[in-house]
Image 1 (tube, rainbow, N blue to C red):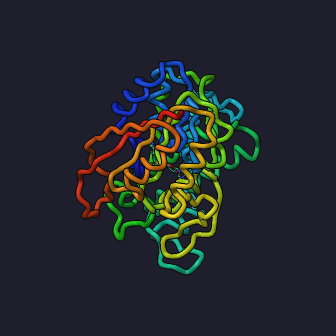
Image 2 (image 1 turned 90 degrees about the vertical axis):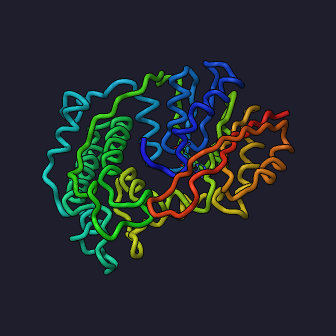
Length: 342
Ligand SMILES: C[S@@+](CC[C@H](N)C(=O)[O-])C[C@H]1O[C@@H](n2cnc3c(N)ncnc32)[C@H](O)[C@@H]1O
C-alpha cells in the first residue's frame, strides 16, 4: 500500500500466525481500525471472513476496493468498456485551475490569504481538480455506483500519494518540490486481491460506537499509538475521498477534522475507549497490536485487559515509521497482545 502511520505490512507474518493459532480459516475476523487494510486483505486471502472498519473515508475507499471487488467493474453506465478505459480517460482530462490548484499548489492563492501551499506541483493539482470534478459529475448523474466510486477514488489516492510533496504525512508540505512531486500524476489500474467479496463487510465508524453491533470470532485491534490524529495527518486524502471543497484552514490548509477526532490518540480517554470496545463487542478473542513508544505502557494495557480474561504478550523487534527528518531512534518493540475473554 503506502506509507501510513502504524501500517502493519512488515508485521503481517506475525499477525497472521497469531490469528491462525487462535481461530481456523473460515472464521469471522473483525479488523476494527483497518487503516490501509493490509491486515484485512492478507486474512481475507487466507480464507477468513472479514468485517473491516475505520473512521476515515479514505480507508473506506481502500477497503471497498480491496475486499469487496474481485474483478474490475465495467463502468458501462458512464459509457466505458472497463476499468482500464475509464482510467485512461481520467489520465487524459484537460487540467483546470480548481480547488486543489488554488489551495494546495505553488501557483495557487489560498482563500484565507496565506502563502501558497506546495503539496503538489501546479500541473498535478490541476489534473487532480479535473479528475475530482469528473468523478463528482458521474456520481451526481448516477453513472457510477458506490463500488465504482470507491475504486476510482482509491485509484486516485494511490496516484496522489506518489506525487505528494510531503515528508511521510500530509500534516505539512515541503518547502521545495522534491523529485517525485515534479513527475506528472498518473492513475494506474490496481490489481485485485483474491478475495470472496460475499464474505466481507466494510463499515465506516468510530470503533467505540459500532462495537456493540459486531459479532466476530476474533477482533484484531490496531489502535493509534500516538497523539498524532489521522484526520489531521491525512486531511488531503480525506478530501479526495469525500469529493468536497472544505475551507482550507491556516498555513497548512487542514480541513476541519474534529468530526473524526480520535479519543484513542489521547492519554485521558484512550484506555476508556478500549474498555468500551472490549466490553461491547460480541467477541471472545482479541488480538491487539501496540508499541513500546505508544501513549500507554504495556503495564497499563495489561491491567485493563486482565479485567476481562487471560492475557498473553508477544514481543517483536521492529523498525519504526519515521518521517524523513525524524531524529528518533529506529528500533523499538512491538507487542502483539492476545486477550482471551472469560
Ligand atoms: C495504526 S492505524 C491502523 C493501521 C492498519 N492496521 C494498517 O496496517 O494500515 C490506526 C487506524 O485507526 C483509525 N482510528 C483511530 N481512532 C479510531 C476509532 N475511534 N475508531 C475507528 N478507527 C479509528 C485511524 O483512522 C487509523 O487508520
